[in-house]
Length: 117
Image (cartoon, rainbow, N blue to C red; front, side, top):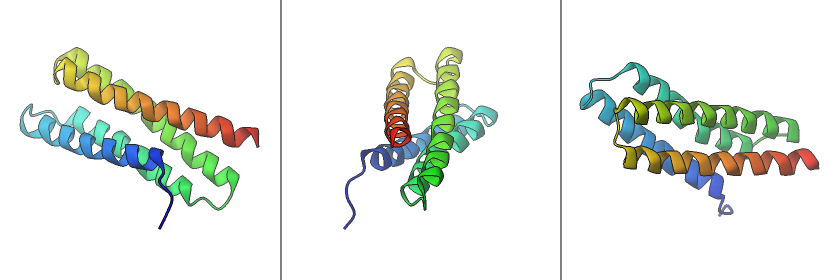
């Protein structure tokens, strides 16, 4: 059994929320452009973090985590835009944004720790 990894757990749960947001945007709001952007970036965070966990070297780990961090920043942008444009309710958007920012903090802390080694 593998050790619990909060980043992988949180990013997977966040990706599931992003998938549901995508479905809502496409079905209810008939919005596909931003929906496609946020599903790509929002699900890529966990995919890259998961890949980093199986990195073959520190350099490989850092590269994948930096990609995950960039995807987190992009997702943060799309969430802020969806809130400001009224596509999603502020409370729901803020909740998702909080999760996104928590993942961002974990990624930054992980990268700082590995780079110090």
